[in-house]
Length: 435
Image 1 (cartoon, rainbow, N blue to C red):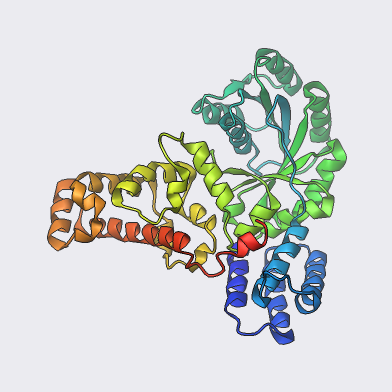
Image 2: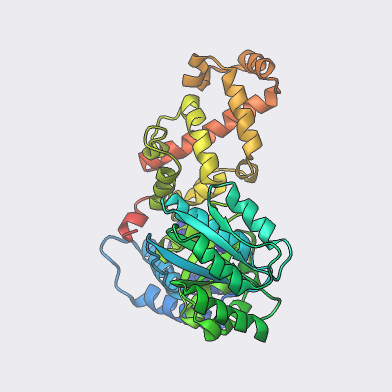
């Protein structure tokens, strides 16, 4: 089980408890220990968190705005934030960034994601492919960034990475952000260290980011320390965090090495890279949502005339609204990631297959809605069996697919209603916590 799933289960247990006493806290601490250790969080940090949880949950004075259950959740939130450590502030200005890491960590893909991140912030961005060790690195990076209007420099047959970087800096002198991809190995070997040091002298980066695969668990700390000793690391970028149960190791590596986490990769799409904010991250990890990030992401994806981000939180939600916002949700990422940003989204009765709604299915939904009348789009409740069959024939789909669309719409509408009406359990908790 992934760390977030385990922790959200524990928060649910706290929220439903009738009494917070010594026995409940001890049982809760055992559950948390199990979840963190299974996620490869360093055992020393787990034991310290357990001690702090027991002491604070039972003896710390309650905040006047929190009841005992909310107090325990707040303590858990604080302690996990402490384990993860701090983020790092990356200015949105002219800079050079160098990425390093072992082979297989997802470094080249992360270079493209990071470039897209800065391009989305309206900075003229380019990348240099200085990975001359891995065959295919040039083609992979040039293809990834070429699709998004990001500058690229590389020399496919050149084996001298230093020469490539020197030429790249001249060719890309008009760009505001330049990101260099470097070679990786299966281990931090002497020749790799020398190449990184030489590249650093030539490139003179403002930031040096280490790319770590979340699946490596507690080995993350050893890797981070080794790279930091070699060239001095400004921050860590964790990749593939969404697909592993061992992500706790890479998260706690930050505290172990005193190197802040800069970004986290949350999926395979080029936009699936998030600037790391420990408070917001832990809030989502515990199921308390992150509306600020949700609205920021919506504003980034769409101009105001195309989408009002606050429409996501309106109680009224017709099929017309859903049609208009469907592309927004596609660009913002998978539905489950949007739900993760909603406060206590785990309390909605949403099946796993809802979270697997693909872009292809979204496109089919739009075709189905094109076969509906304006009246049906404004008031889906009038769509009875005969209308379902008519819509299915008109859209070239099956009645079952039409029903699936209507079910999806009802789910989304219930989410919006709950957010507006305050029916979400502990809805005000995030506000109380100052998040």
